[in-house]
Image 1 (tube, rainbow, N blue to C red):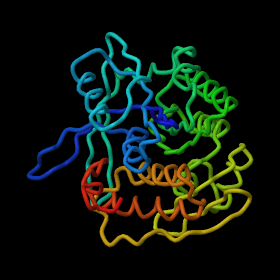
Image 2: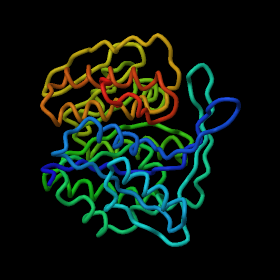
Image 3: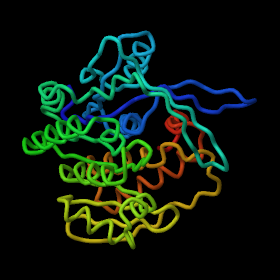
Length: 307
């Protein structure tokens, strides 16, 4: 039986990713699910890795749950809601950078936090809980409050919470709601994983150090600010450091760069790495992920491959 438990919280969607000859390949992905997928490959079997969300009761939801189980992701913390389905997104690529088109009007995940008792049951006994700004953005304001309150209760009971800010302005009603929602998520997190370009646009931060200071003030004990090809700013255990990311010769697809970074950092810390070592391992993984197409890169974990 696993001794420890990692649970990611959010929305998994049908992914249509560009392939060859103008065709698209169907898969299942989503920011926190991507993190769980990579974490399952990085964490030892003494850890269980699960996903918490809501899906529909239709065939595509069945297929999604079957895919998760095949990939080693536990599905016991997933609610099924009649009359709903799962969202869909399509990736467009230009010079390795991605843009998205979304269809999520009937997505069950938007109702994942409607039942506070279910949230408490799903979070009970977990060692590590992970969510993102997208998790919060798809929820109604009152559901967002319920989710963060449940995370606060789980944290008080001993769980550690990580929060990837993953700023997506189009998912929020307005910039003020977005800033308030992101700081609400940070207020219940031990570890915050922002990207400086997004934080600068959302909050007007003058430097990565300003981003660190804002999340420290919110209560985080670890802040890791990614900054493209520039050094990663780390604040942890009362000390700051800068770690140079791995140079990338060619970006094929930047999808899941931050998600894999989060998985790499959290898995490394969970298995005993120091904060700077965890940043280095996370950056190395993300550098390899963006050399592949699509959010999930199983080829990186094939027999004999170095993760």
